[in-house]
Image (cartoon, rainbow, N blue to C red):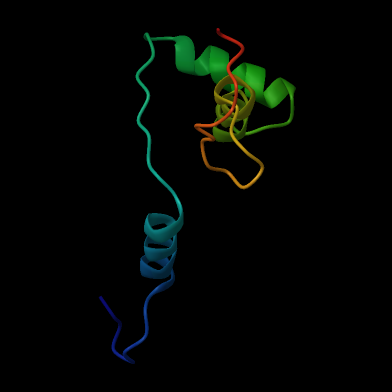
Length: 77
């Protein structure tokens, strides 16, 4: 959607950029957990998103370019 001048609004631009560059993941946690997670994130000077997504690369062995590497040896034989 465009404004009167035919240009995208800032919100539309941000939404289009996010849609093209990010996957959205919804996580459900037990009541009260969000505040514990927020406090832990703030203690490290991070947002909740930065805090939570910081665990993913090491856990899933994501390559430097941000995609899951299906060829990484998991150590299981």
